[in-house]
Length: 496
Ligand code: ADP
Ligand code: MG
Ligand code: ZN
Image (cartoon, rainbow, N blue to C red):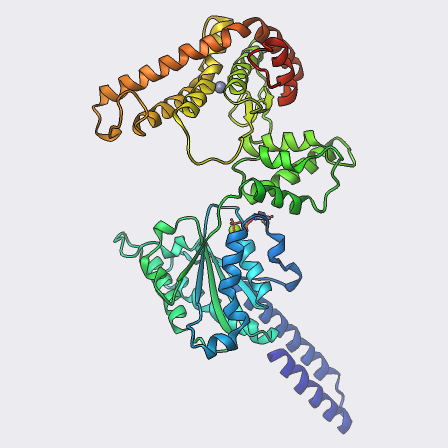
C-alpha cells in the first residue's frame, strides 16, 4: 500500500520537475531509496509476526489425504456453511466459528486444515501453540491478535471472502485455566483467543473460521469447547488397513515401483503406522533403492524401510558371533510360536541390530482388532516367552535379551486377571491383595511357559540348523520361514 503510493506520487513529481526543466537525477535516486526501504519494511513485517502464510502453489486437496473418510466427510459438511453462506443466512443458522481436529500426531490434521482452505477458497494462516508461549507476559496475547489481523488483511489483499486460521498444538495455550502455578501467560493468550472468537461477526467480510488441532482433548479448558467456540470436534485417527493402502498409493504416486511390489501387503505389514510414518516409509524405501543404484523400488526395499521406521536406522553395533547365534535362536523361538498360534503371521525375521533391538520378528496382524479372547492373550504370551525358552533349550541358559518379552508376558497375564479371565474369576485387580495377584500371575506365566517348552521341544534340531543360516543371511522372509517350517512338522503346520 505504502509502496504503491510512494511510486505513484514519485512518478508524478518527477514528471512535473522534468517538465520544468530541472535536473531530476537526485530526485530519482531519492525515490528509489524510499522504495527500497518500503520493500524491506513490508518484508520484515511478515517475518516478525512469526506466522506462516501459505502460497497458493502448495494447495492441498481432500483427495490428497488418504483414509480418514469419515473425518473428511464431517469436515466437508461443516465447511458447507462457508460455501453456501447465503442459504445459511436465509435460514438463520448460526455459522460455525471453530472446528477442533483431534487425534495422534502425523495422522493428517494439518493436511485437513489446508484442504479445508482449498475447498472453501479461503486464505490460510497458521501458527502453533508453542509459538505463543514466551517469557514475557502479554506477548502471546498480542501474537494471537496479530494472527487474526493478518488473516483478515491477507483475505482482503487476495480478494477472498473467507480466511482459515489454523492453530496447531492448541493444548499448549488452551490447557485448563487456573492451575495456580503462575500460568498467567498461557491464560492471557487463551483469553485473547476466546475474545477474538467471541468478537468474530458472522456477517462480516471476510468470514474467519478457526481450525485447531490437538492430541489431548482431555487437557483442554472447557471454555474452549462451548457453543460458539470450538463446537465441532472431528476425530482424525490412525488409519486402518484400507486407509494405509490409500495413503501408500498417494505417497508412491510419484515413485517408480517394481512389478512385484504389492502395496496391499505392505499396508498389512505397516500396522499401527500413521500417515506421516507411511510417508517416511515410502521415502526410506526410495532411498534404499537409490543406495543400490536401482531404477525401481522393490519389495525388499519396502520391507527394510518398515523395519527402519519402526526401530530406527541399523546401528553400528557389531555383536560377537556367539551373540548373533543366540539372537538367531531367540528370534526363531518367537517365530515358531507365532506361526503355531496364528499361521501366516510372521512377516520378517531379522538379526540386524536396529535401535535398541538386537533382533526382531515382525508379525502381520490378521486384521485390526479391538477385542481379544483369553486364547488369543495366551497365544501372545507364548510368542513372548518363546524367545527365552528357545535359548534355554539350545544353550541350557537364558540371557538378558528377554527382559522386554517378560514384561510383555506379565502385562498380558495381568490383563487376563483384571478382565476376569483367570481362575480367580471376576475380580477387581486393583483391590486384590498384592500376594494373591502376584501368585495368580506367576501361575499363569508358568503354565504358559510349560506349554511353550512343549511346543518348541520338537524343533530343537531344526532351530540349531536354521539359526546358523540366519546368522549368515541376517534376515529371512516370512514365506521362506514357513517353507522351512512345513518341512519340519508337516502335520502340525498343514497350512504351509
Ligand atoms: P498432523 O498434523 O496430524 O500431525 P500432518 O498433517 O502434519 O499430521 O502430516 C504430516 C505428513 O504426513 C503430511 O505432510 C503427509 O506427507 C503425511 N500424511 C499424514 N497423514 C496423511 C494422510 N492421511 N494421507 C496422506 N498423507 C498423510
Ligand atoms: Mg501437524
Ligand atoms: Zn525376544
